[in-house]
Image (cartoon, rainbow, N blue to C red):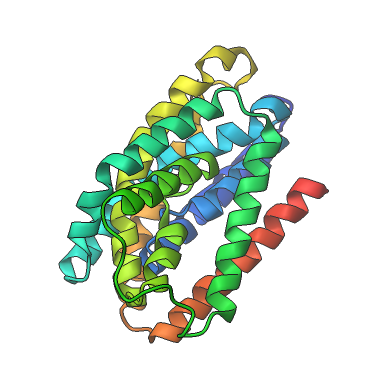
Length: 277
């Protein structure tokens, strides 16, 4: 027995996490997201099964998600970069404000109640889903992105919200770029690079945020990062990323948008169900 669970149950959970890791890597390659939108609900259920305190359950899932996203995002970004469609100029412009937003989010995570994390996660994912499923080509702001102050502000917001949701910023970046008439394939590829900027400082920030609550956290945790969760997710997710990237570049624009929207809808409904039940 470990934390009240039999070893057969532990093996089943481990196998489930390995399968979820493969799904995470596959979707990371298709949609340019680090996979946090899948990882967070799965880890939340795992920690609930282990009877982890409600006070730390959601931030632990988010911090672990950010740590898992690090290698997945790096591999996804490198694969998309080879396709030549990454907007490197935008990534350079966002580097500092995004990282500052992640740092701010990590500081908030140290003191925020669990309800804040749940509300942001479900709400933003749902809005992104609606935009992808029902938006039309004329749903745009301008043909050119803003520069300077407003570009930096949006980068800061992406970093802040992503760190509080445990995501790599992919869906936020996708919506933003498509509102300025950027092709979906370029948005997906650029989002994968954004995941690298968010996940590394985000994981470190959640280690810091969770350090005062180590007495409530499970064994093999560094602050709000579960080393067990990281170890089980990363291997299969890394193997699956290239297959997702190949599929992404074969799909037409609208099919990719609808697929991403349906994917988010399923995740939001599942997350709300596991939160309410």
